[in-house]
Length: 223
Image (cartoon, rainbow, N blue to C red; front, side):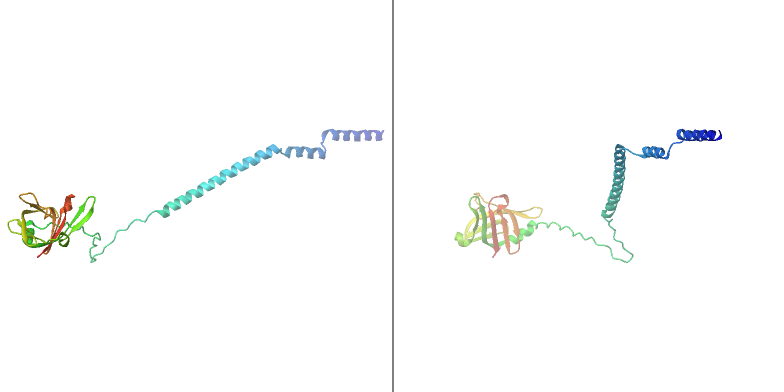
């Protein structure tokens, strides 16, 4: 009787343990199911990590670019010019800019008339003829010598081979930086002289007869 009761008690305990306490293998299987991650979840986690990494790299590059731009702007700024300093006793600083050359005034009319008085020998007449080109006449080509004798009453006699040929009146006027001379005659024939700017020295004069695209440049030297 005692053995039967003991056996029944043992069977009751075993039955209770089988229905109330999970086995070790069952617990491990449940833990494994809870900790396992699906393939889709793994891919999602990877994509999230990639995006976070991209954002971090972008922020670092922007920070480096700002530092480089600031450094370049600072280093390429031109230096501020410094003013020269002077101390007591130093000579004053001179202006290195060359002074502007003053315009040379023209010779006085009275001075020009005084220089012109006397005899002058013709040297040459240079002309530019349309369709022909430049032409230079000299005594040896023309075949005669020409002399201009300026007198005190604004009269000039033209001699060809020392023979009086024609008489002109002349007038010298003053411009801003040059003299002008004009010849007239009773018959309007002034072909032996030229009208225009007058370049005059003590021993030579030149009349720029082509100044207005007409005539030629005639030169004389003092006799």
